[in-house]
Image 1: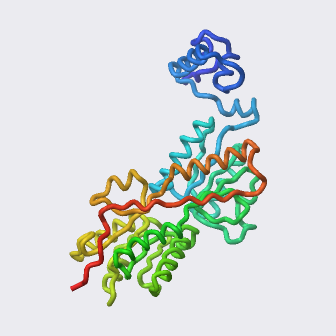
Image 2: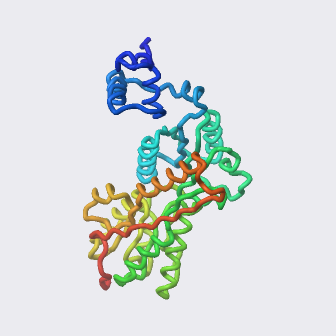
Image 3: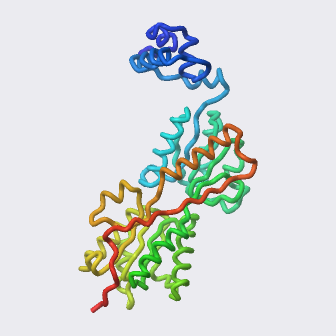
Length: 339
């Protein structure tokens, strides 16, 4: 059995007292630059890892936050998770992560986080709980920050302006002469999907155009294929000349169908996608896309959480709405007459 490195081992290696090691590791009390260097060098050399259970018993604090996300397989929430983890670590906290797939799982995770005496929950659940009395986040005493979901006015939350972002993308395509614009968006029963549809309809209304449900595809899962729906749309008497596919899988499927029909992007067909900066740089030709600023969203979520933990937040819940950036690439062109 491998012996766990202790604080005493670190103190002996650094040539200092256990109390000095404790001051450095817990950032409590004065520690000179030289002392701090000796201790941290010893920590690195020995591979010391703090005993969080012992620290919790000693201080009454776990210094750990629960993070609940729909799935780590989706690159957008995964990027947000990575950013939150780095920001929380810089603030001296660890993350305990769980994936939300159904309401019962959300309840399990909230109970799990409570039983381990975590200090708060950052959550982007897969379900929005239209009945507030059934919401597991309303039953916990832990501070809760909701990301990209509408669970009412009782929670601190950070949201993207999905309606505004979609309206911006639509205005761009409309200015290029496109009037038959398809929209492919997952999550019809979640706030981001509903708000995108609202922005889509608003842009059509402002341009004096009728809404056509035949141009809309809103599957529940972001992994759903868009190939069959796009095939169907392109066979309409008045097919779309452009589409907005807000999902990597949705965009990929649509692109395969469009190219399979012999249409060239952007000469014959225009496309707008969604992604992070890193994802957009991998695409060729560069795709015009709504860019999700996951770094800013993570910053806001972390600050909202820290304010609650530290008792500096006002009693009323705070709602922060962030804007999308429309990054112009090479996937959109002026409408060309169909022969």
